[in-house]
Image (cartoon, rainbow, N blue to C red; front, side, top):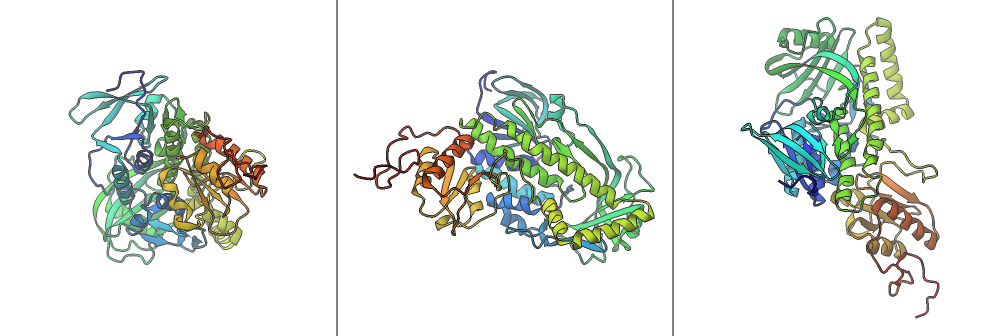
Amino acid sequence: MAPTGKPTGNVLIVGAGPTGLLLAGDLAAAGIGCTVLERRDEETSNLTRAFAVHARTLELLDARGVADDLVATGRRVDAVQVLRTTSLDLSRLPGRFPYVLVTPQYETERVLRERAVAEGAEIVHGAEVVGLRQDAAGVDVEVRTRGGDTLTRRASYVVGADGVRSTVRRLLGLPFPGQAAVRSVMLADVRLADPPPDVLTVNAVGDAFAFLAPFGDGWYRAIAWNRRHQPPDSEPVDLAELRDVTRRALGTDHGMHDPRWTSRFHSDERQVPRYRVGRVFLAGDAAHVHSPVGGQGMNTGVQDAANLGWKLAAQLRGWAPSWLLDSYHEERHPVGRLVVRGSGAALRFVLAEPRWARRLRVGAAWAATHTRPVARRLAGAVSGIDISYPAPRGAHRLTGRRAPDVPLAGSAGRLYRLLGDGLFVLVVAVNDPAVSYLAAKRWAGRVHCVPAGGVTRTTVLVRPDGYIAWATDETAPDRRAAAIRDALNQWCGQPVDRHLNEPRAGTGVTGDGRPREDRKS
């Protein structure tokens, strides 16, 4: 144990779900000591609520080299059923993943766990967090082990990714304001004598809602809600009720039989007011929970982790700007708020009770999914592709937006292949020696500098999480180099090269990227 008051340069993550595992892999890949504390014992479980892996999440997994493995476990759906009569087309989404992947959450956890362990992260099961104290130098976490002993672990930072009943959030004393979105939702894993033709099957009528999704091994997850009967979560699920509700919603129960597991749960709409308290951060369901409509929960948590990981790594490696860690809350809290509100509105839309409201719902759903600009915006929102972060006034139009997976010249291939190591990527025009030297020499180990795969007028700095930090259309070499220097100073800390004014032989470029005025030798 490190003495209290001395930072250890490591991170403790509480919770080994998808959020915690992606974060652990990112930190370990960046050379940061990382331990995941998980209260549950180590075992593969079928108790999963998340099935949808959206396009933006798949892009983040692609950058980490695990997307293809995960895609192989599931089924691609390029049109998401909204109601029985209409669906939302995802096939026009930009990028490599114009669909939603349907696969059980335990498969997502598997690929992320394997990556985290391969990168050097430690995962400790049977470790329950029971206490937390922080000071100016670090955080002490009290952990109860399987044997009942209580140990203290010291870390520079702690991340609570421990779900809706987050112990970390409670120990911080943070409120979790909100309300119940829907109560007494039935869950079951069942066999179907007559499986539905669609991968995802969903519909709602005035007093019933049902959803069916395959595990891929002959079992189906059934989710149903009965407006007429909403007992406490502790009441067992009766198969007869589940079949009845499914028939009312879908017109058939598809020969549902032999449940291997059943449960009830309620879904809340809540968000913590702050994602950061000193050296402690919250991510995933510990920070926000919402309606399951749209399948946003796991995806939003994974994207929280992708935003936070590189920022913690930069801080612990000593080059983060002073504002960088605070930007995690500033960027992700508005996204969480939007998801809470949007999924809540979608739930109320789907469960509308009056007959006139149901008729209006059908017409509105058809109009939205058949009006191309509206459908495009809906697809971008559901998939996460259109998520963006605030840009400073006067910034380039691309700043804060998702970076497309553009082709790059040479062996780099494409942009997302370079994002997995946690470095920025500066995409420049071919044969731009001023820019290449500026990035490669002065910010070595923080920035890849690569030429675009085609003709481009725009120089772009891409963050490790795949968002555009800065861009310019400047064509004059001296002004472009000066602008890049300022952007790298802002995002990547102070340069490390002490010989900034020495010319690079044969290039006519000084160390700070400015063309030499005197080109004579």
